[in-house]
Amino acid sequence: MHMTDRGLLALVRHEGIVPGPYLDVKDVWTFGIGHTAAAGPPDPARMPRGMPADLDAGIREAFRLFRADLAAYD
Image (tube, rainbow, N blue to C red; front, side):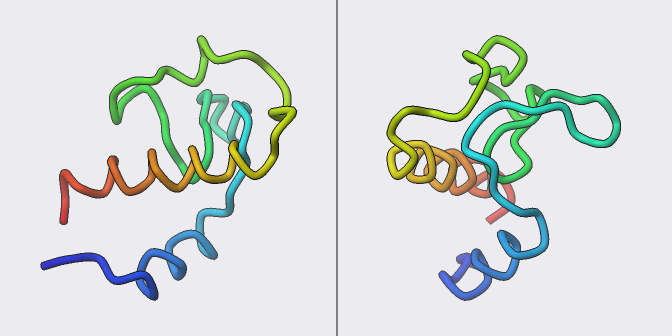
């Protein structure tokens, strides 16, 4: 089964998107759309802190990484 764009956006709406590393409510370093080190590289704990200077590029990277994370389940 392949994740549709509509399904992807539904997950994004549920997860939220943060184009910089942050500590989630369970004190786990997270990036983008729910990406943690448990999903594989990159490790958000090792990423530069703060929002990227190019916000559009940061959002594109968050979506790219989200699609890569989902590929394991797709």
